[in-house]
Length: 441
Image (cartoon, rainbow, N blue to C red; front, side, top):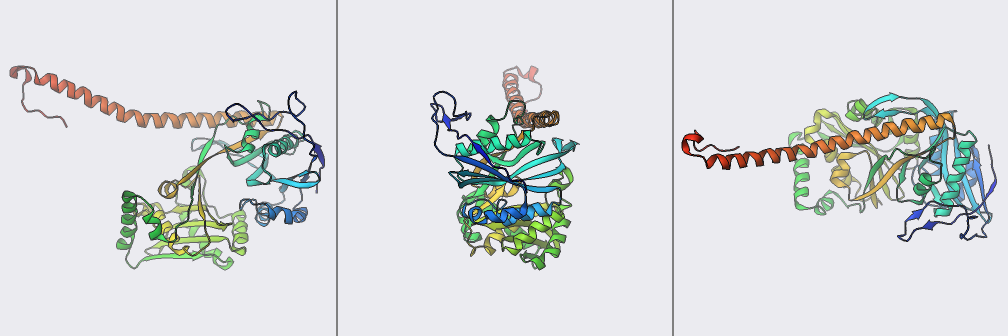
């Protein structure tokens, strides 16, 4: 175990006259107040030592990924090349916050759109989703981010990575502002993260909460499946460890046919890491897997966990051969009915499930993939490569959206010119007009 103790200077959050956060500055600057709090840091790099933090760890709320048991299983499942990197911040000798991450050597994919251009092997310090537990004030975030920067300077990793970081959070502000210009993130990669705020008590309760047009559309889709596959519609629920093998086999059969897998290389994969995480979730009673069968064939699946009142969707997919029946929507409406008695407050759709979030999401939060790079030639090279690929991809997407918007404008302009030409043609003498009664389409 590597155990580091370091005293750090506290910092104060600075805001402008509009209330927006400004870059966090050193408290030794003129005009800033010093606080009497004594802050210390220690970094834990051994899974066995994390158990000593259990009482404090579980006292602070967080996400499923930052749950102590789930996090430890995540580290162990990734093999000997992975170790925890948990920073404990104490104020006046009492733990005040923890930042949960892991160090791993892995291939980092760089893509232009859906095309992978290279996959260099790098050392990554990944901070898990919801990994900041405890006091999340700006001062603590600044201290923790500075500690991450010091770790990168010491050669712990080539970059620090947050896959999903809320852009309105103090942590995101510090991640963008505190590193030097050459080491901070310039990719500008944003995602919409969607939730359903109030979990409905059954399918009918959910449908009644929608507008008339949307409710009618979903009811038609639901009825279409029942009418077309009368007697051949089956939905199976898998929750126990014993259920995992048949569930994984059917999920893999569906996932291997999805565009997400074939085009982007994303989605559900039958890997030892995923299996270990599913086993832990199942043992804790969190795991929820549903598979829809049409004509006795696996057509769609939904896999997630129920943690602290939030139903979190991890992986979804459907066989494209059944796409005209919207099997994903049919399955989700059925899941609402099956879970109506569960203690669920919200549903987390994530940012990758476009179909479900468009149909059911009613709360959006903007999140970003954020990085801090090591002050080395390797780190600067990775930063430049990430910035170029992400900026180019974003620009290409903007052009595509602009082209889609431009085509209706071009069509409207052509129709307008045609109408003007037709009106002018009507003013001409009959012998000049030729045919009478010509109509525009």
